[in-house]
Length: 373
Image 1 (cartoon, helix red, strand yellow):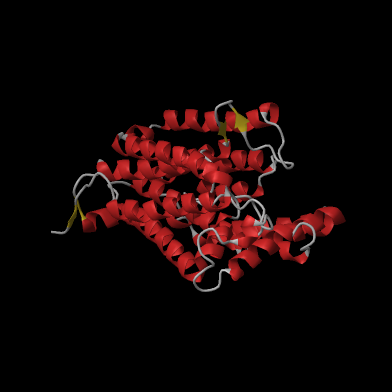
Image 2 (cartoon, rainbow, N blue to C red):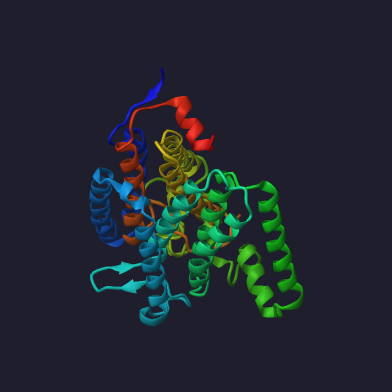
């Protein structure tokens, strides 16, 4: 009898996470005067570590309650609405609520809330999940925050919310015919808008978003400098503190959006490859936790967290190497800032919590439950 025994913490995941956090701190120290940005980020890392440990020891099975999740969902949307009233636009976007000592980006919290509410919805309907109505109802849950985030405008986070929903829909067992029909309708709707509704300047914005390197003197400047920084690192990098693109301020936002380019310039292809392998280990351990979860709710939540992190990693690295649009999404556990780091720690802590309170379960029984048979 092969059983999956409960453990408090996944130390393989933690072992992969620590060097990523360290890489972020070292990169920030390299390009900030006196290492000030690194010391501020170190404080957030310590706080996030405490949040991770705390959340991993709390029993979150109470979140299976639909009433609690609906209140959380309403709270998250209220925070998003508050941005339009209390937030000051920065670079044309209203993303932050300023509380004096710290700032909060509500969409980060909303991503976890959406994962929870979708995990609850799909876990209770895995038997009749092939009905098209479940695509529509679950789509309604994502439509509200998606619209509020899209109007900020924060296109990157809006796409992450949509990606979380689409990924969970895909693994939940919903009919592929219905899913294909929905995707087709979305494509047709976009083509209709492109041909008959969008003005020329709106089309130009979309093309600049999709292909930022087309205008390297304008909207594509950031992407162009990022590609140069990544390429200049070559195989083994220039060495810590010798990244000229960042140090000479050719590379903008090197502490946040383009920290992967700053890191790659100093550590080269080898260092960037090791970093991506460490991220892959974290995703693998989260998916492994999903496969060995005691119930569908915990499994769907873990898969949602894996999707959330994967999308941030893929989009951020993609825009750093010039193959994805510039969206402003941070690189998990590395980019400067406390808001996203705390939420990422919360998400991992909750995955560990479900793992901690797992009961020993026969492998075949667990896979049957996860597949809904």
